[in-house]
Length: 517
Image 1 (cartoon, rainbow, N blue to C red):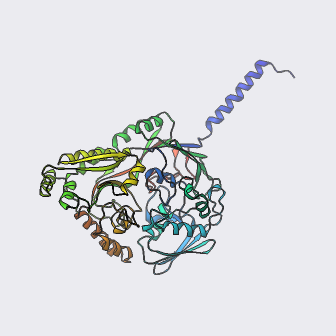
Image 2: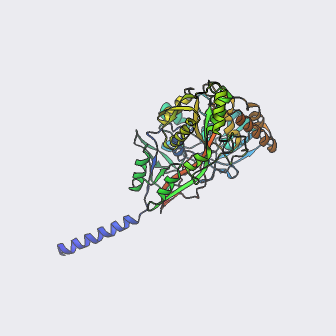
Image 3: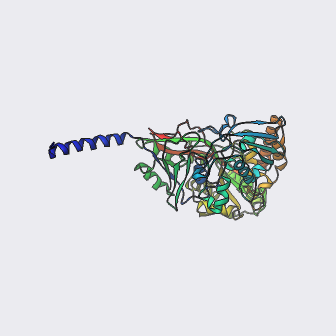
């Protein structure tokens, strides 16, 4: 049979056209994310503290229990790697029944009780974890059998489930992978989450791949490209040009309003509110004089800061812990009063003002607000000289007491105990063996924090937490400035697979259900 060249060409064109149309109908399978970073920090969940690391770690690991995707409500915590659990009447013994068949990434086999025991003991060890203070009430963690873990406490804690959720030290790692990989685990981790480590391209991107054996089902996305784009302008341009589908935004109203105008774009604003505070080292001159600390507090105009950030993306703080936390209370924050600030400086022996040198991150979302604060302090005679450094360097240096004032923006498990313990208990003072993030070097609320931790009376707990907040505010150990909500931009056709109201990882939770329409 002969077929003319013209007929063949027409047929081939029709087939190609049909194939092209079919390809266009296929949903996009690769999610390109733009993050404000030069590079990744540490992907080990026991050390991931920056937004850069927290966001992506949340996509790679599971806890025994989890917050519902898109939520940070501790009252709706649900099963994750554990199918069910029970506690003894006195609340000091907890038993978890594990899911069977859960597979680690990279062929590291089935997750069993030994991995859970290893993970939780590792999280409680200050030599192997940045969150060891959270787990100090742990007395013993043991494997009853391959799928049963028993946890014993020395004392009651306000929320045991909060310690074993998919957040910080509660995330479960592969014992074999940690031991085999050593330091390499910091950047090539092994978890059980919907996405696994694929490749790290230094200063370019972290590539994640779908976990084919994920226990909730294979993810709808094949891959995530987590790109490091430090510049806000470059990240915005990449989004406008369609090079990225999801990006960290700026906690500023103008940014949110501008992105909303981009075709096929949406802006997500969600909890938690990260409380931006000036943590003041109360042991270091001139701030060992409370009058100087009070002057700093009176110089801060919170209303101006919220106007600068924007009403949709920020809010006024009410205490030294964020709003909405269990146990959050109104505290006596000093009001904006420039004349009083100047008078206090004169009383403290600084009639001509003073100069203080601080170290600050170049992270745009934090730096912009701090530049406003710098201007506010200058108006009362406090000249704050800022040395701006890369974000990972900032974290390293503030933990070496190189900055008498530390601007820290943070969200934690939403219960007062966690925030008070990490930022204001003497066990958490930076530079000590049990250091966490007490940059104030204070111990004035230790008694209340400790008593609330072990109290079984909910009303008494709240009273003690309130008293701790009052003491810290009166002594001006830290100056709350504003709470910045999480702000991200995305393609309108990107579906998370759940309503997004909150995320403790500080970024949208990407799960096996996330997909493009």
